Image 1 (cartoon, rainbow, N blue to C red):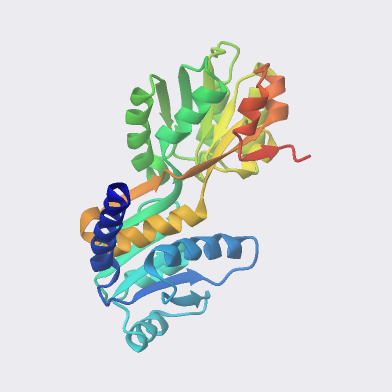
Image 2: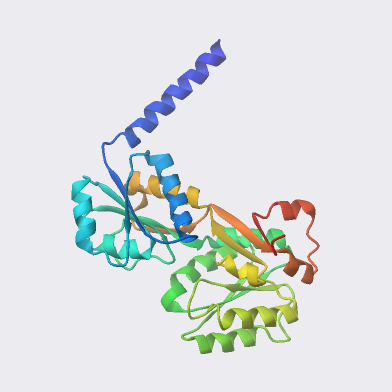
Length: 307
């Protein structure tokens, strides 16, 4: 009986702690792009996560390329919205121009230049998570090469350098100002002298990781040298990259809702996602002679080639 009373006391404490956060009387609005599948499902899953935390009464507005700021402003007034969550770059641009104070941004690639957002979660993996997954799948790796542009990925490289130190890795980051310069850099990296304990990392950077020209070049050269390629885009794994991380969109929605409710705790914080799922290519793993066990293969969320 004492044990039962102890559990009841804990539950009551939790209820009293949660209720003031969720029962503020504020209306949370979510603005997201009106897109076709498969992108629609991504935003639907994020919204499900937001509702799971903030309640099913969250107001929704799907915006198209034709919508203007006035449309968003009128919707905010009509629905008495106190807090906004903007999903995607289209929504971000519209919400940034509104005068509402409490706004959080999510599902974008890099931190917004506009400082009107209190916080945000990005569709870019936490480098610590990337390196942890890489070391688990390829334990002998000790060095990572990455090509980046300051314009698109400079902020991310700063985070990645610290993450590399945290994981006992050496990160060699090569700055590039154009696709042509990036191609030259990759060719230099993937020459005959590259160490077998090294990996090449492709970012979500249009100047350093173009999928039409740079991706096939890097994959071809790396395949010849038996060098693992990791990427911040899951689609690259289907093409032959060894590993990529992608977000758990439902968990992303939960985190965004928590940021919106407790935005004062996240002042000017734009974070890469940490609730990560992994995609890996077993054909590439076999080519690299990694000899993954069944247990290792079972730890992979999305396996290519698809059976």
